[in-house]
Image (cartoon, rainbow, N blue to C red; front, side):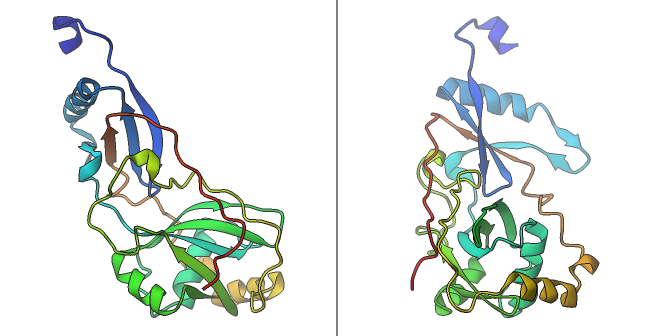
Length: 230
């Protein structure tokens, strides 16, 4: 209605992807477009019982630490990866971790992005970035800037690493100590992940958030040819 009463250039708001796998990012071409978008969102109310969409400025979006892991490419499903991480690392607070993206690869290794929690960062750093996985270990690297567990994200969302922007690792052979396909398969069967109800990674509370950003920009890509050395 505001558009009809005060004719001005049509507001432009575009989908800019997801932040941490659960927060929708919307890029607006001007502050006026962002304001109109937030007003329109407020009028939606509850889209279904208990779910109200909220449009926030980027500086107001809570952020959780993220990490990159390298794992055998034989394990592809996010729910299986999460199950293995949780079951094999009982000393870590993995109850609300999320595997938000897995990049399959034809070589022996693949890469995944995991959303952690702030309590996990210190134990991971103390373990020098090594996690148990099956009968062996894998490498995990907390994103620089997330390791200090800040309360709020900083900068433009385009400068953040989105789950979609993951490049496949190189064809290097896995380091000594990585589990083989057969051993990982036996480990999965022994722990019977089918009995676990951990498959839903959507996050009922976090999924109902929309982010508004004033200017759009290209999303930066990361490179990941091999696990980092410690």
